[in-house]
Amino acid sequence: MAEEVKVFGVWGSPFSRRVEIALKLKGVDYEYVEEDLSNKSSLLLKYNPVHKKVPAFVHNGKAIAESQVILEYIDETWKNSPILPKDPYDRAQARFWARFIDEKCMSALWKAFWKHSYNWEVVSSRHHGETLLGCEDHEKAKEEAKEHLKTLENELKDKKFFGGETVGLVDIVGNFIAYWLPRIQEASGVELLTEEKYPRLYQWIHEFENHDVVKEKLPPSDKLLAFFRGRFESVSTSK
Amino acid sequence: MAEEVKVFGVWGSPFSRRVEIALKLKGVDYEYVEEDLSNKSSLLLKYNPVHKKVPAFVHNGKAIAESQVILEYIDETWKNSPILPKDPYDRAQARFWARFIDEKCMSALWKAFWKHSYNWEVVSSRHHGETLLGCEDHEKAKEEAKEHLKTLENELKDKKFFGGETVGLVDIVGNFIAYWLPRIQEASGVELLTEEKYPRLYQWIHEFENHDVVKEKLPPSDKLLAFFRGRFESVSTSK
Image (cartoon, rainbow over all chains, first blue to last red):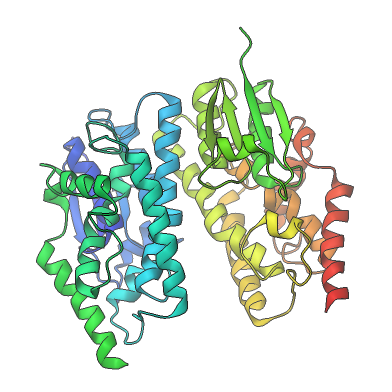
């Protein structure tokens, strides 16, 4: 009997893309459902009743929410092409850095460009005035973000990926830094992550976005760039 | 050869107590090092250089930080008395609720009583004015906290523990709600969690704090109550 595997996501959400990358790495076929965040489907609300957010993941009728929780589930369910290392200590390190990215980097990076913490829903709802650059909090967030990126740069060392030779949990969770951030930088004209200051992260970004499997599950570059250009422009015109 | 297992904690931190509860449930002997947060030891800074916080955990020379990451490591390393369920879907559910407690409940509950989000360090540093009740944000946080507690109440259903018949990940991560919150309520005079409104959580609290193993690793009730009384009094006198 064919398995039911479904992902409820949004094309530009790094969180739902994490789940798609993991499934693609495992070679698991799935059905993708694009959500309209301004008019969420009843299925999304059914499958993620607590947070009411993408991604929601369904496997043979059972629903799971929260991208990092879904990634662990996928790795435990389909054992090929492991996302987490085998050794308990290495697994703990991967989980530590994945949490570091979500709890420290994502929030500082997002605040460096927007006045609120990470919320794709708010950004994509195109409310004017939600995107504000240059205030004091942004400067603080920028400094914090740069510091966190330096911590990641040091952790990467001379490895190809955070997972070593292959893409692993930290790389997948870091997709926002690898792919979204450079396009947000280009759209906003504000550069935090530069090749000069973060040569290892820069090389990692190159490896990540050109990875045979990963690149198939990243949003189209032009579309993402145009989206963020629109966001930043709507702010400057609404000021 | 005897194993080296060390926990760097603070007596009143629910986060370091989580690690101690897990080790005690597994019957793992460990050395406990009490930290002075106003003068952190060089070992704590060495073992948790990124966050510089308790708990830090050391096993045979290898250090791990972040309580939930440590709990997963402990469960993978000592297989007896499992903290996480066996089935991948049940594991995902446990991880989902553990994250819900940390990301939603803890922060709303803490904000309901203090003006900042959870930070034991700030509270224990006894700065006057850090504890403020009654402003608008607190009211909002209180409503949020009550809603999150209701979500947990519904999730608990008629189970003895979130983990079923035995204490598991969600119960351990929920130690703040089970043990700290009632004492903060008593010290502040503000009640969010009442038996009338949350009968299942109330029964769970009773089971948790009287659990043979858990109760040995909870801070003394009088000491914790006196600590929080001191915190709330220092505020009213500094107003």
